[in-house]
Length: 397
Image (cartoon, rainbow, N blue to C red; front, side):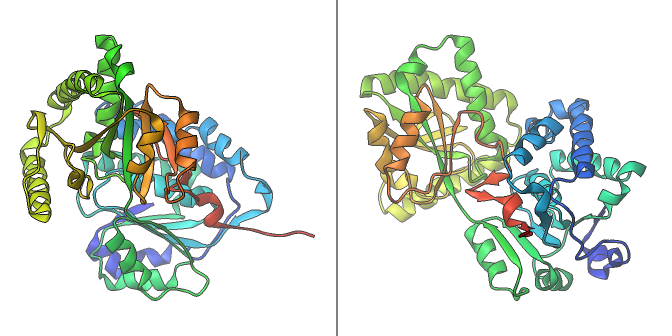
């Protein structure tokens, strides 16, 4: 396993050792052992304490967790990968590439993965761990199935790979997905696309009013992890907060909630000087699009929110949130957008939320998870069972 820069990748020296086109059984023990070693190395590293998202990936890779996913697959012993899968990681989510790689490895494929051009500290940490473990003698077979690289989007070598790979996994906005969909590919190529989505947090005002200071801090930290940890760039990060309660409860609960969120941001968020400008530009664009003034509420410069309906339109990033107040769960349904992906919740019954979502003919909600779990990626993501989509089941009769 190696990481190639743009110049090295274009020269394609990796063709001499990478197992291009090879496929393997789904859920091989060698892959599980490799991922479990990665998990141990991540979780035992002091650096993991600096990067909550990297630590979450470490827990994800544990053998018990991986085997739980595999146990849900029927006919596992008859499943095999499709060959070489090319992964295009998003440029704004630091460790998404690592989850995509796990999907490709467990589904029995050799994997070529394009990393973001921007260097993220947690990505650098994970790449080092993955490389160190992959290059250990017992994992050399797995190492030959992994190639990481950086390149321009119009790189000649990249375009050749798109046309020759057996599968293509693209994470990014709609424009990125459309770009790669337009490129020539093999007729039998398996394409797994993850386009733009939006997400919502639904909170019970009365439940938040009843929290102790310690419980409120825990909730605010979970919300911080869902949002500010990735600057709301993840499709599963809420850009909209729906409050369940009357106006009086909303005023009381939102006041203490956003104050606690602001406290978490001030103590943990280190890039406000640059992202704050970007957020203000987003807000100015919304005002320009609306052609009128938009009323904003703000506990501080790092938390901006509005109940103006125009504020619900994309993009909302860097601590900008649309707010909606409704009296019960059923009334929240019409505010879930057609490209809604994840609903995070607090103080509410998840079954009632499911029934509310299910009653909406136009909703595409894929996940209903507690606040703090928005970024917990699984092998079934965005309604797509990746281990099935990136493999083939051989029929025996």
